[in-house]
Image 1: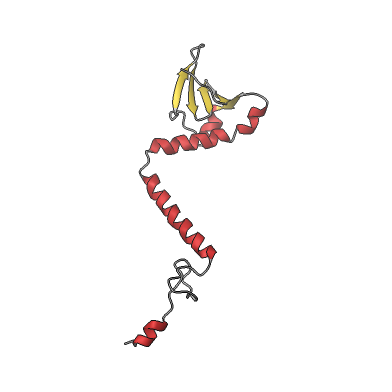
Image 2: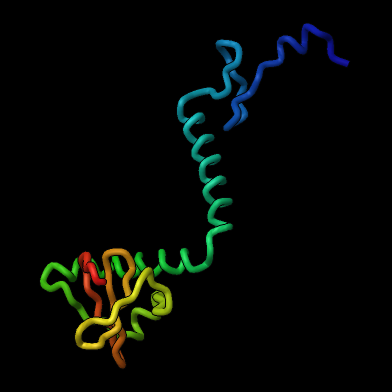
Length: 135
Protein backbone atom coordinates (compact mmCIF):
# COMPACT_ATOMS: atom_id res chain seq x y z
CA UNK A 1 0.00 0.00 0.00
CA UNK A 2 1.38 3.41 -1.00
CA UNK A 3 1.05 6.44 1.16
CA UNK A 4 -0.33 9.74 -0.07
CA UNK A 5 3.11 11.37 0.05
CA UNK A 6 4.47 8.70 -2.35
CA UNK A 7 1.53 9.25 -4.71
CA UNK A 8 2.16 13.01 -4.75
CA UNK A 9 5.85 12.49 -5.52
CA UNK A 10 5.15 10.12 -8.44
CA UNK A 11 6.10 12.09 -11.54
CA UNK A 12 4.03 12.00 -14.74
CA UNK A 13 5.69 10.51 -17.81
CA UNK A 14 6.13 11.73 -21.39
CA UNK A 15 3.30 10.62 -23.69
CA UNK A 16 5.82 9.63 -26.38
CA UNK A 17 8.98 8.21 -24.79
CA UNK A 18 7.80 7.46 -21.25
CA UNK A 19 10.55 9.42 -19.43
CA UNK A 20 9.66 11.15 -16.16
CA UNK A 21 8.65 14.77 -16.59
CA UNK A 22 10.06 17.61 -14.55
CA UNK A 23 8.88 21.18 -14.50
CA UNK A 24 5.44 22.68 -14.60
CA UNK A 25 2.33 20.74 -13.70
CA UNK A 26 0.33 19.41 -16.64
CA UNK A 27 3.37 18.90 -18.86
CA UNK A 28 2.78 16.07 -21.37
CA UNK A 29 6.09 15.78 -23.26
CA UNK A 30 9.72 16.00 -22.21
CA UNK A 31 10.72 18.08 -25.27
CA UNK A 32 9.51 19.43 -28.61
CA UNK A 33 10.80 16.38 -30.52
CA UNK A 34 8.67 14.02 -28.42
CA UNK A 35 5.64 16.27 -28.94
CA UNK A 36 6.17 16.37 -32.73
CA UNK A 37 6.82 12.62 -32.97
CA UNK A 38 3.74 11.83 -30.89
CA UNK A 39 1.48 14.06 -33.01
CA UNK A 40 3.00 12.71 -36.25
CA UNK A 41 2.25 9.17 -35.13
CA UNK A 42 -1.36 10.10 -34.27
CA UNK A 43 -1.86 11.80 -37.68
CA UNK A 44 -0.32 8.81 -39.46
CA UNK A 45 -2.69 6.43 -37.69
CA UNK A 46 -5.67 8.62 -38.62
CA UNK A 47 -4.56 8.75 -42.28
CA UNK A 48 -4.20 4.99 -42.45
CA UNK A 49 -7.70 4.56 -41.00
CA UNK A 50 -9.08 7.01 -43.59
CA UNK A 51 -7.34 5.14 -46.42
CA UNK A 52 -9.02 1.88 -45.38
CA UNK A 53 -12.34 3.28 -46.56
CA UNK A 54 -11.13 4.66 -49.90
CA UNK A 55 -12.19 2.60 -52.88
CA UNK A 56 -9.53 0.40 -54.42
CA UNK A 57 -9.74 2.43 -57.62
CA UNK A 58 -8.26 5.51 -55.92
CA UNK A 59 -5.17 3.63 -54.82
CA UNK A 60 -4.72 2.14 -58.31
CA UNK A 61 -5.01 5.59 -59.89
CA UNK A 62 -2.43 6.87 -57.39
CA UNK A 63 -0.06 4.04 -58.36
CA UNK A 64 -0.60 4.81 -62.06
CA UNK A 65 0.20 8.48 -61.47
CA UNK A 66 3.41 7.68 -59.60
CA UNK A 67 4.54 5.37 -62.41
CA UNK A 68 3.73 7.96 -65.09
CA UNK A 69 5.49 10.64 -63.06
CA UNK A 70 8.71 8.58 -63.25
CA UNK A 71 8.81 9.38 -66.99
CA UNK A 72 8.53 13.14 -66.45
CA UNK A 73 12.21 13.82 -67.27
CA UNK A 74 11.77 12.36 -70.75
CA UNK A 75 9.15 15.00 -71.64
CA UNK A 76 11.75 17.78 -71.89
CA UNK A 77 12.40 16.93 -75.55
CA UNK A 78 8.86 16.05 -76.59
CA UNK A 79 5.42 16.02 -75.01
CA UNK A 80 4.84 12.49 -76.35
CA UNK A 81 6.89 9.39 -75.54
CA UNK A 82 6.46 5.70 -76.25
CA UNK A 83 7.09 3.06 -73.60
CA UNK A 84 7.11 -0.70 -74.02
CA UNK A 85 3.79 -1.96 -72.71
CA UNK A 86 5.38 -4.96 -71.02
CA UNK A 87 7.87 -2.75 -69.12
CA UNK A 88 5.27 -0.36 -67.72
CA UNK A 89 2.93 -3.20 -66.76
CA UNK A 90 5.77 -4.84 -64.80
CA UNK A 91 6.00 -1.66 -62.71
CA UNK A 92 2.38 -2.15 -61.63
CA UNK A 93 0.66 0.16 -64.09
CA UNK A 94 -2.99 -0.77 -64.61
CA UNK A 95 -4.44 0.47 -67.91
CA UNK A 96 -8.02 -0.05 -66.71
CA UNK A 97 -7.88 2.76 -64.13
CA UNK A 98 -7.97 6.39 -65.21
CA UNK A 99 -9.72 9.62 -64.25
CA UNK A 100 -11.32 10.25 -67.64
CA UNK A 101 -11.05 9.08 -71.24
CA UNK A 102 -11.32 10.79 -74.60
CA UNK A 103 -11.42 9.71 -78.25
CA UNK A 104 -9.51 12.17 -80.41
CA UNK A 105 -10.08 13.18 -84.05
CA UNK A 106 -8.06 10.18 -85.25
CA UNK A 107 -10.36 7.81 -83.31
CA UNK A 108 -7.63 7.05 -80.74
CA UNK A 109 -8.71 6.44 -77.15
CA UNK A 110 -6.71 8.51 -74.66
CA UNK A 111 -7.01 7.87 -70.94
CA UNK A 112 -6.10 10.55 -68.41
CA UNK A 113 -4.50 10.45 -65.01
CA UNK A 114 -4.25 14.06 -63.80
CA UNK A 115 -1.75 15.80 -66.14
CA UNK A 116 -0.76 12.62 -68.01
CA UNK A 117 -2.58 10.90 -70.87
CA UNK A 118 -1.87 7.53 -72.43
CA UNK A 119 -3.02 5.52 -75.37
CA UNK A 120 -2.45 1.81 -75.86
CA UNK A 121 -0.99 0.27 -78.98
CA UNK A 122 -0.03 -3.35 -79.70
CA UNK A 123 3.33 -3.48 -77.93
CA UNK A 124 3.66 0.02 -76.55
CA UNK A 125 1.91 2.81 -74.72
CA UNK A 126 2.08 6.43 -75.88
CA UNK A 127 2.24 8.87 -72.96
CA UNK A 128 1.57 12.60 -73.16
CA UNK A 129 2.41 15.11 -70.46
CA UNK A 130 0.56 18.35 -69.99
CA UNK A 131 -2.95 19.51 -69.39
CA UNK A 132 -5.22 18.63 -72.29
CA UNK A 133 -8.77 19.84 -72.09
CA UNK A 134 -11.09 17.78 -74.20
CA UNK A 135 -14.83 18.02 -74.47
